[in-house]
Image (tube, rainbow, N blue to C red; front, side, top):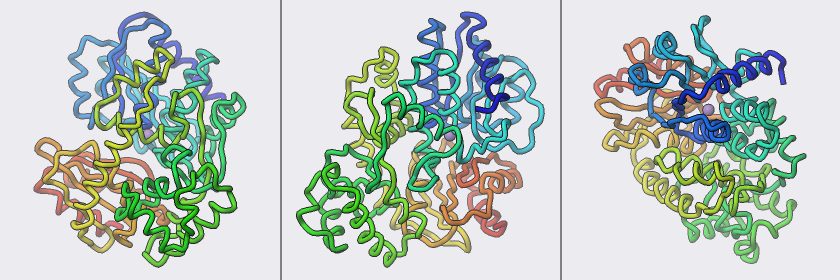
Length: 447
Ligand SMILES: [Mn+2]
């Protein structure tokens, strides 16, 4: 770990330990945000420091924090903004984040833990939960058992981008440490998001990347698809765990051939075969990717109470099987709608879901469909309703690497007096309904 980062972490620990005044934790609701928050919650609980935790959809909600009784605030997984800088004049703030830092040099009283400040790539090498975990480990070595949370955040932020979907940078250091501690292990195969004891046909029905909307969540259709690929019957109902690596590679090759014909991008097809991560210490959940998806669902649907209770008592009792089922059903329901609404511009495939108030799912769906075959356009954009505005989410496909979409969206949003921004491959913005068309046109022509 870079020594600069280390000393910054020590200062962040001082921030937490300096007194017992309550802390307000505000995090983004995705897996990375929730995982980072869970790690911090465990630290505060152990230290008997009172806290209140909230996930928010946009930083506009944070403005009210100024009037709150809390003097200490921890912000997790948010891009630094004018509002946050203003807030730091009234409150003591610790920020944990990995968004690219664009044009702010002065952070006021704020303490910012962001990998970019330490020449670490926040897009690939570290995420918010990874930084939160390093902080936890510096306080108490035994918190190593929380490492799967950090890795789950990295997975859902698509940071498993080394060869065979391994990790890079700080994420890799965390994985190596977890493996050494016997908490995490990995195996090459068809990348699974369900229990490793599930059959091939079920595993394949729940592949999130590449996302195959026509078969997702449907075992019948999954079986038919695999048969069409030339996979023999006896393998379909065999448990994935019992199919050896060579056979799994052969299956992925067969599937890849069909996906190429169906216009999937090579980048996404390659991600079918890679490392599966097995974790211990999370009850019945053994697959790290299942854990990541479960956290994603719980964060987006405000269902994190049970997880928090389980984690602070260090006893993961539930299997959370229902969560994955509910989550998959939601995806299935909206997939049908999304498939019928793709509208193509020069560079953008746009899906209008403005008749739904599902702001917390916007980013999820744009991520999923960016790895599907719904369009060959480099950008996927989904819009949903958020109060009187639209929440738009934009994803750059994996094989278009020459654009920084977070920076671009920020500029385009600013042009029409709105707020937006994000990472290299993913971005979002809040836009009045009447300006969505203008935003699309501006973004489309700026590529
Ligand atoms: Mn993140």
